[in-house]
Image (tube, rainbow, N blue to C red):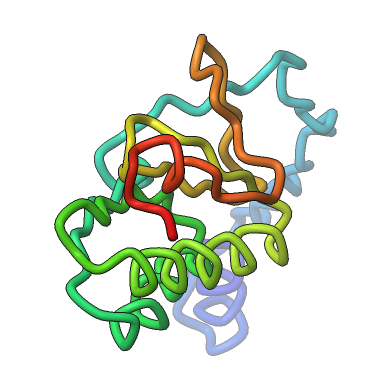
Length: 146
């Protein structure tokens, strides 16, 4: 407003005898930076980041590579090899065991012919006693071996 009043007075249209009004400059208040309250932020599980469990019943060894893709994407896998030839089942389990091992995972036997393959992001607990460290003696135990 002081600018316009000064311009009007300079042009000669202002009131005589009035002194120009000087506005006081507005000082910005000093602000102190606001620091967020320290606390522990905990994420809650949602449907978006829920883990998927893949259940498969392969019919041939050609499907093993597709199943291993699930392990590469950090999805646990349950594979049922009951009802397929013993040699075909052995090849599938060997292939998926190698994939799980390469990804830092584990293989656990659920029942005769059904196996759980996990990767390093899955922590298993419970009484699944028949953990398979390397061999496939389950075929002989089930009477399906050579």
